[in-house]
Length: 212
Ligand SMILES: CC(C)(COP(=O)(O)OP(=O)(O)OC[C@H]1O[C@@H](n2cnc3c(N)ncnc32)[C@H](O)[C@@H]1OP(=O)(O)O)[C@@H](O)C(=O)NCCC(=O)NCCS
View 1 (tube, rainbow, N blue to C red):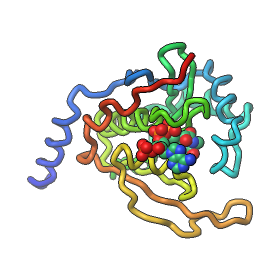
View 2: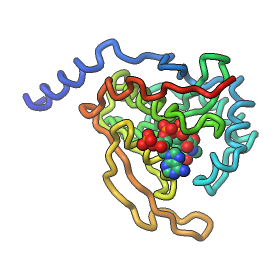
View 3: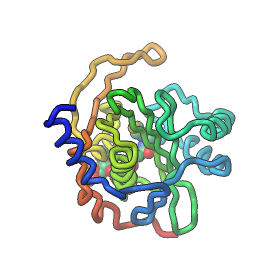
């Protein structure tokens, strides 16, 4: 290993020593691996038209969610190419209000893709930003990832604003990147490197929670 890389690795390690293990408790939220009993809350969320607005393939039916939750039991943290799914839980009442996914796309390069969805009733309180910031910290700190990226439809402004809030950078605008049901769709590529993650960015991101 070159001196430069060693210094980089040591710097990254120092920032994350003992930091962010599962479950993650952050503000009003708890983040843990998904479980079979999350089914009804996830079906509720993925049935909401606004949550599915930028997912035109609409694959998350009740049956698919049940299958996906069963599969999660076989996916270990660190498996390449397999989506690790995490439930975002409101600690007040243990309702699963969202989920997020980390997929290690390349173990050698320590790169992963991130995605997140929240129940519509919990949007616009920066809970998405809070959970995203914590999951990036988990990915960099606990999984020693080097780079985490996310793709989003440019029309999904709420999503890319949330990513910018936590310090992810827009690295590309892929024009006509995907063909979905005969329509060409653009993508923004957002990313963060391990040494760009700032613990303090998470301070006070979400202060308001919805009334009971
Ligand atoms: C993307 C998602 C997780 C964001 O959750 P959230 O908790 O509402 O996000 P936050 O409150 O942290 O941030 C939303 C940002 O959008 C802004 N915003 C709110 N309403 C908006 C609107 N109508 N148009 C544009 N921006 C808007 C907010 O001001 C905030 O930006 P700011 O922090 O700079 O003020 C949520 O909208 C969602 O689940 N969407 C459906 C699934 C999805 O599209 N996932 C993304 C794929 S990776």
